Length: 164
Image (cartoon, rainbow, N blue to C red; front, side, top):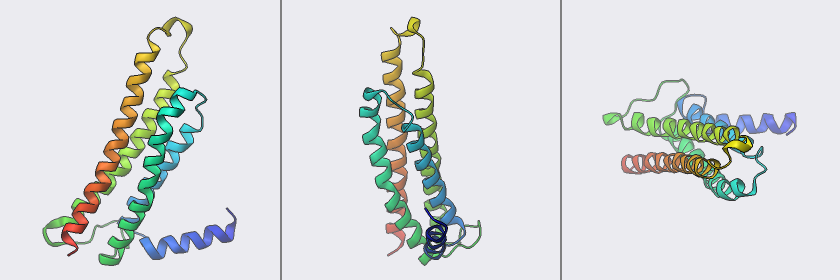
């Protein structure tokens, strides 16, 4: 991306997401997603790719939802600092907590994927154990990805519940 394109994207992000808590939550999520895809690109094993690419696609589908929610939050309760704006009953804190946890769970999914890659480079002596271990690692990645989706769903539900 060229300098001008990056500048325009940065200005759009600042306008839609502000500079504070909502932008931070969105950017954390995007960085985790980028990291997940970077790690995935390092895999050559077709079986792993067949198992993980659909998960990666599901995670990527969450980014527009995350951005849309953070944009709506910025419109409703602008945050230009790290502080979460006050709300009746602290519901904005609850939404932000879910968004933050979604980003953290996504980072952990990327870490689990990286560990699957690292552990997949075993020696010939442990090949008899590798299929079960690999399946367990792929299951862990799928569980983490499901947790990310649940967090985004929960944040949207909390927002919808209180934005009436």
